[in-house]
Length: 570
Image 1 (tube, helix red, strand yellow):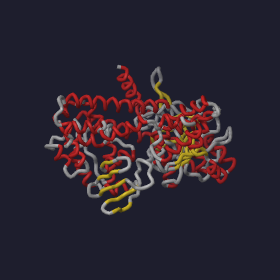
Image 2 (cartoon, rainbow, N blue to C red):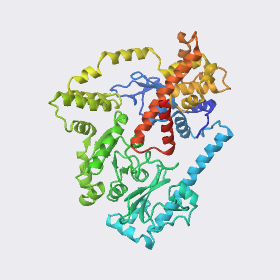
Image 3 (cartoon, helix red, strand yellow):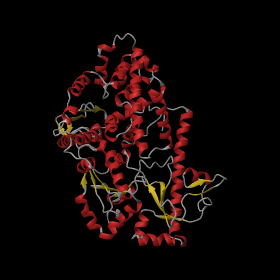
Image 4 (cartoon, rainbow, N blue to C red):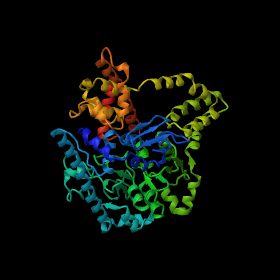
């Protein structure tokens, strides 16, 4: 939903929210005098340096410098944008987030929300229809197939399995044709009219975490190709963000101690049939960063179990690459390799659940797989091959979050590749940059300081840039500063931040003498904004490009990627 969130509501929300309650539900805190402490969730450390003040309603880490309000914590910890964090915090305290939007913008929001609601309603009705067909005579072949695969009626009912009849127009006579097209359930003919996408297939409804049917998968009965077919991307369904079986898993076991990530619908169902209820499957696409963010919310231990063939091994490596930025302290990643020609479905039916779960003890840790993969085909007795290993590994290791695990991975690379590691990674240039960075504000804080000293220049910022800041693309502090300055009810920055969590930081910015007598503050402001916009665009471009490699872009993201590439080319 678009539209600016009123600053008055943000202030009310921060007044109501208890930062200790918000953080303690995600990171266990211990009382220490007037404050609370914990080991920082944003970097690895052995002794607690993360402090939460219930009086200032502010958190600060003396180790890495992370700081902010309850909103800022949610942005960092849950990887949310500024508006998303406000929505999550408001929901926790039973508040509805108001939006200040013009009539046209509000109308677009309502239309988009109504379209998604209509798609979800239609998907649910179609899922009921497909399930009913499985119980009719037309579904006998599908029932026989499921029984042959060891799936009983209880499991089929739990996952809502159904059958799409063989006809070309089973849905068109029962549901609105325009809605079926929008949901991807029918395909438009060039000569006019439409026909069913799923025909003579077992149907697997795909549900989100709330149990809403967002799409479908279909397994062909007979020789039809492709053997597995999924719904296309729609406003309600994004393959790169969802996994199959998560809703059913959470209904069965709640928060699991570990998650098993497999490739296929039947893998999840066969494992559940055997009493293994902690498996989920990707939806015909490579594992994405969004998949990892979703799964790590429910368990700190993930085991990937893909088919024991070349395609499965390729999928496993891509999953490892996607996981690297998300492997902060406490999170584990393993790889369960199956015999050639086997998949979880066939193996669990052949050897039983006890033997299958026993294989978990032999899952290969991420660290071992990482170096085994990169050293494959290399002769580390040769200097050239050691240099090649270093070249392959250094960029990947740079994606790991800072902390002991990253340091140990670098140490292992040093053992294998030699002293090139020391010279390249621990040179004086990096340490010099770190010392300078401590003395100079980053782009986001510099821009915030400029705006606080020259609030009248707020309108000089391009509308597109202000919109990006308000969405949290440039951090919580800058978003808060812009929100205060755009609120006509607030007379001054000092008033807007009085008694708030950023009061001291605002005062510190206003005391910076270098900003008081600039020759051309407008030029400085626009220069900083241009540099920051370029930085955020590049980060967004890289994120979309990585997602495009895995085939996970929806139509809106494809257009955004196209615009960003055109902008860079100018």
